[in-house]
Image 1 (cartoon, rainbow, N blue to C red):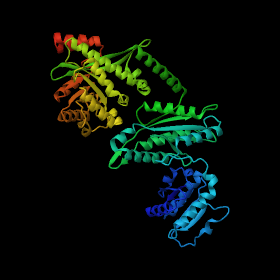
Image 2 (tube, rainbow, N blue to C red):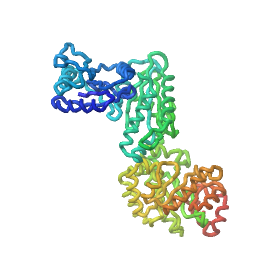
Image 3 (tube, rainbow, N blue to C red):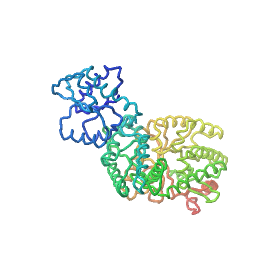
Image 4 (spheres, helix red, strand yellow):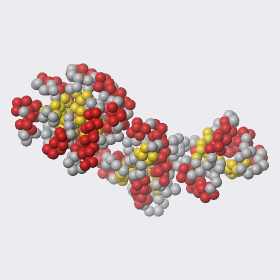
Length: 574
C-alpha cells in the first residue's frame, strides 16, 4: 500500500515510517512530499492509496494544496494528523460506507491505530487496489511512458476534430555529460530540477510525463478550436525557462533542450504515428544545436524517407568501397615543413558524384554505420601510410577522426590492434583525433580505450579544443599528445582580443603539459604569423592547402622535396 505524507517537519515522516514498519502483515511504502503545491503537482497521485497530512502551518498553502488535489481529480483518502487531543478507537473506522477523511491525534498514534487506518483504507477497498497500478517514474513522480500512451489513446479517441490534440516531446541535449562530469547522483538531481521547471511552464491541467532517461512529454487538448496557439505558447515558455542555469552544488549548469511538436490533422491518427511525428520534429530541432522547437510538417516524413534511402546507399557503397580519403596538410611552422595530414572522408557517389561529409555523415552516425565506416577509414589510412613510406615520406603522420559511437563498440581497440598489426604501422605514424564531446559523453570507457590505443603506438589528439567541457586536470591524466585549437578561435585572433587571449593561453598551457598544439582553419598570413609568434607547433588551413586527393598529396610532397616548401606553397593548384 503506497502512502504519501505531506508535512513541513521531518519528525512526522520518522514517526509514521516507524509505525508502518511495525505492521509486517500489511506491506506498505511511505513517500514524503514537501508542503508545496508545485511539488505536489509533479506527483502522480493515482499511484497512492492513502494521503497523510502532517504539520502544515500556513492556511493559504493548505488551501492551495487542496486545490491541487481537486485539479488532479483523484479520489484519495486523507488522514490529517493534529496536535489536538481526540478520542480515537477502532470504532472511528467502522462507518459504512467507509469515509475518505479522518483526523487523528499525533500523540495518540500507535501501531494498533495505524494498522486500523491501513485496513480501513486498504483492505476494505481491496477491489480498487487490485486494479493494475500505473507506476509513475520513481525519480520524478511523473507519469511514465506507458501511462502517457494510454492517456494519449483516450484523448485521440475523444477528440476527433482537426488540431484538437497535440503532443510535445522535450529532449534534454547532451545530458550524459552531466553524469560523466558530476556523477550519477548529480544527474538524478538535475532531472528532478528539470522536471520541476518544465512543469512550472505548463498550466495546471497540463500534465508532464517522463518518457525516457532525459526525455519528457506533454499532451495538449482543446474542446473548442485549435490547440496550436496554446502549445506554441508552452514551447516558448519552456525555452525561456531552460535558458536559465541550474545550480548543482557549487556549479551552475546550463542545459539545452530540443522540442518537437506534433498536432493532429484531419482524420484518425494512432498513438505511434503522433509520437513518430513529434519525434521527427524533435530530431530536426536537435540539428540546430540549441534551445529551439520545431513543429512537424509532412516534409519531415519525406526527409525521413530520404534518409532511409541514403542509409541504404551508404551500406551499399561500403560494400563496394565507393568512399575515398582526401588529405589536408599540417605544417610545422617553425621549420616550414609538411609533417602530417588529416584524413577527411569523401563519398564517390555513383550518381551524385563526390560528396562532402556534411551530405551523409549525420545519417551514418545515427544509423551506426559510422562504426564500419570508421574501420574502413583506419584501414585505408594505414595502407596509404605504407605507400608514403615506400616513396620516402615516412616522416608524414596521418590523423583520422574517431566518432564517439566507435568507442561504444566493445571490439574497437582489438579491431584497431589487428589493423595496425596487419599493415605493420610504426608507433606515432597513425593519430586518432577525438572531440571534447566524445571524451565527455563516453567518460571512463573512452579514458581506458585511449590508454590501450596509446600502448599500441597510436598518437592521440583532442580536436576542436576550447569548445567543450574538458578540463586540463582531466586531459593531464590521459595519453593525449596534441591539442587542436578550434577554427572559431583561430579565425578571429587578429580582430578579437578574447579569442587571441584564449589561443595564447591554450598554447602556453598545452606546452606546460608537454603537448603539441595544432591550429586549424588558418586562412590568412596574419593568422599564421600570429600563431608562429606565439609558438604554435603546427597549422592547417586553406592558407596552405585545401583538402586534396591522395594523388595530389603525393605530387605536393614530391614538389616540396624537390623545390622546397616556399616554392610548393606558391602553386595555386593546391
